Amino acid sequence: SFSVFQVTEPCGSGFGMPWMPLLGLSLFLLLGPLHWAFMVSQSRKWKNRKEYIGFLIAGYNLHCEWWEITVLLRKTFLIGALVVLPVSYAPISLVIATVLIMLAALVGHLAMRPYVDPLMNLLEGGVLTYSMLALILTLYLMSESWTNTNKTLVFFILVGSNAVMCLLLLVVFLVIALRRPRQESSARSTATSSVP
Image (cartoon, rainbow, N blue to C red; front, side, top):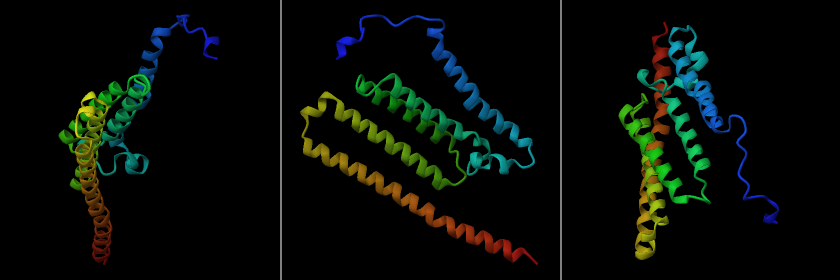
């Protein structure tokens, strides 16, 4: 039974209780993104750079080799929002926080265009835009105004916009996937033709 728990008793204020989240955040920033950024910047001096950290920087423009750090931070902030604003306690606040995080990611992506391949920039921008659209529509569904509208019309608008976005993203993905083998084969044929 729930009455067994002492829910009226305040939590203890032991040593470092208010400082624990700050300590955890500081350790995360030092061990995660800051160390990663330092490693990427220092790796420019390494001889076998691609062998060691190629999986982190491959596909990005030179000025955006650190871009994967922003993906880590975005995922961290999304999980942090879920922890601070649980769905069962504050669903609308969670969706608003998620919209703001995704908006920051979208603006950053559009400002930097981090990928070498323009289609990859288009695909990532499309996925972030689609995420924003889905979150905004979710926010609308959670609001009070949803109950006062023609549900059939709104349903078809929601399903239609999601279907159009999915199809557009699928087309971009297929263009990227089909273009890769041709690029690799042309690169191989160029390499074999240059061998004497």
